[in-house]
Image (cartoon, rainbow, N blue to C red; front, side, top):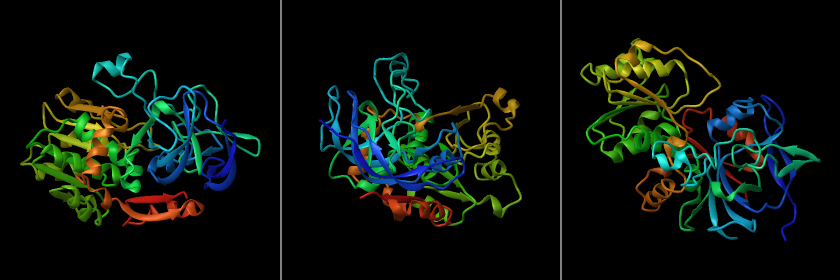
Length: 372
């Protein structure tokens, strides 16, 4: 029978505080859960916002939701996953039976939903420090040597996969990829603009390329992102700081004044949602909102919605963890994805705060966190 494990983890104790490495206790998994020995994790901008109490200010919490690890122990009702399997965490499950799963219109499962309260599905935690309960992040907490998650949110991966690449597929890159593939459903020959060329935006560019888009415009204030964007399939680059024109006008200048078929907003800057609406085609243009930030509201020009344009948000790029994520994993194994271009920096778990500094550097895309 599994016992409580004492291990190291990155704990954020309060709003705006830097995480600290603490010795914590991780309980054994309950019936539908697995306990995972983490191998690698990565830093997503969502983790930064979580440190600032968004969307739910619950502390103390163990951070991290991207990662890959090996299953250390399982609950007695877990099926399809065994001890020793490699897994990555998802933060939305897929039961394939609820109204949403059957609809084909959304990836937001009702049986295994997105959770932001920092607790397991049964409303409790599997982590504690000095006798105090610790909150999780979404379905998991990957910045820990061990963590527990519900098995229905885990995705088993092949042992031959590059583990760093697998970690990146747990959130950011996959979110962008799915936004172009599943949500926009980019058609061959269509035009796409992607605003914000971090891991999410680069994933959107890659999917647009694979879908056969004829024109892929990347938008970012960081001039170094031009080279990165081109590696993933970008055909044109806009640096907003190099022109006094609004982004939407610059996009129209590259599309004979018509705008693009699809604009994928990955920065989370709310003012850019309206720019995105102005940048897409009259009557049929579609904006996919992917970026996540602490700004909850922003201005939208309703007139452009009345002109037949569509604004749609999504979580995890509309990807279903059981049906769609294995397709990306297969592409990864066949080296069809440029995931090696994402990895720019690596830090050990003990130096987790260095990751928060590195991510601000202009040449940084993804920071890999080595747990072992």
